[in-house]
Length: 491
Ligand SMILES: *Cc1c(COP(=O)(O)O)cnc(C)c1O
Image (cartoon, rainbow, N blue to C red):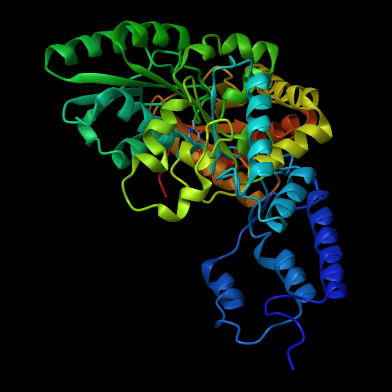
């Protein structure tokens, strides 16, 4: 006989499994450098363990939690490891994990005020804190979204609607080769063809070149195009370069164009005094993307889109603008004072992602965040100094926002053929050794090593040990393949 509603558990079982879940979380989050930086598993191996038939009968929850934490979940990169420098490693934080669980338990949905007044209020205040943390003017407002890609898409959709009046045929957008691929994807989704995105070569510091941009806008106008959008990258993912916002804002102002800043990686630097200097002009952009799940240490997913005139989001996304029958929504219509955040973006039902940032800011205080961001900048500069002082290492770009790129150059090896494949092979060797994780990127057409140093658990010692290790691996590799410029034999 059924004594409980379906899909519920007795309280004592919930308590037991809940305690076990917290234990597993604490264990995972206190692993630090004891745990692996990367757990490599093959598809075959994982399929053997996890490609199971749909479970027709329930199993013990505690055992399931242990099985997940012991095998599938730890497989892959541990981006919170202090020697993980690959891609953009996020560290996560404990209050944020609890916030996600609470938001799920309370079915929090900051969509319509009627449905989620408390969650909406929490999201609004978190947006305001974020604005203050970055020194943005009070006019900026927006929405938390899943990540930088969707933030870019949301902003560019508003730009299109605000400037193109429905005629996309001659529209053109501009960015540098260093912009993130999600920009091209967003333009594709909003209906621009490939030749409607002009991708300009960067200047010698890998930044969008304002003079080149102005020239191209001028010649495009003469050829009948309608330039409407410039995308500046604030912290390119490859090298951390920052496009010159002030000059780009001047051009956009003059030309009646929209300036979007993709700060998914780097906008967080504005929380620090020196970052704010590097990002001078941030308040002049029309829209801004940032990713708290990168440099504000949040677990996935948390992105954010902010507009100088947030009401422009409503003009694009408000339910009332879209003419299908929405009679069932009438009861939740907004009076403006109590906003429906579902009117500001493409999603209707949306989780309270903001809560993790709210709870971690409240737990640690804004200053802990400022210091953690600042440390990421310091570590990149420290790594750059180490590289500059080492006879076998050479910088490939100036240290950007939390990123350094460099090469290992075997003594006696000249620039030219072989050096690119050597870096790729060296990165593979480091990956296989399992001590640290670094990856490669392309700088001016050359393959180089790249480290992103934004993890707050990373110290100067972790940087030094990793670079020493890279040099050791480089020496072994150079000796093994007997690579000198003359006999660089491919294999
Ligand atoms: C990471 C990144 C993105 C994409 O953000 P997601 O959160 O991965 O969707 C966009 N732009 C830049 C500059 C990035 O570094």
